[in-house]
Image 1 (cartoon, rainbow, N blue to C red):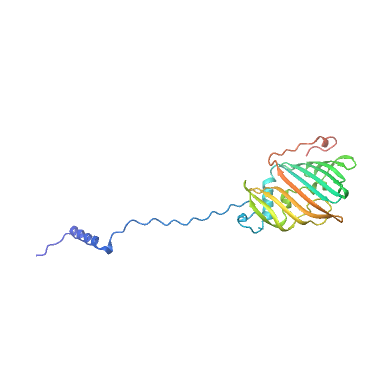
Image 2: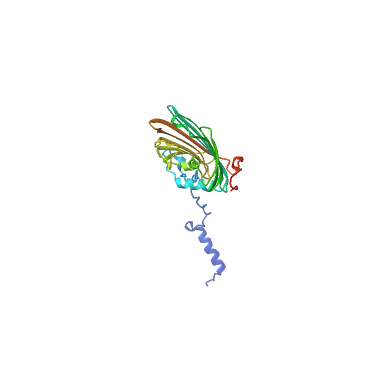
Length: 270
């Protein structure tokens, strides 16, 4: 007589057999998911136009000069600022010391001063000149070496003021640079090898610069806030050494007021 086995009993027997088979043991806990290897942080750009890898090796670096200039323009063209430039030319029996200071407002109003003192062939014909105005309407007060003073309105900036109008970014020469990260952000750029300037460094009749060097400080947001240029050149048949320093200060805090000497007889304030 065959005894029929119920479904429940058959299921229980099957599970018991499977549990005793080592090849079909129930799986243990799942292994934890693999953690991907950390990706090294990319170095933050030191400044617009300055390679992100600039401060990681000893090799001279090439910078994007156009990008540096664009960033400088974006940061300053709609803000007030003051630019101060000092230039010194020194050689045998000749010297020239020039100081420009320019105050600029967001709407383009400018107040600029020029002072010069020299000896020998570099003695200036204009020892002081002040400019005030906006766009195509300027008033200029100048003192000549003989003491004569004149104050006249002019339709454009005179050469003595126009040629010194560039900000430090205008001196960003074609060269390779050693670049270091600044502790407060941004970069220090020091030229290496041959230096070629985009324009004449000074409105003075000298020969082509030789043995030039350039040092700039650039902020993290792209303002070229200071500059130091040095080079050798000649005036006539004599050698001279030139040093030019320039700084941008009072960004957003510069004001320009109409000077008293630009009053009587001048057109209305621009």
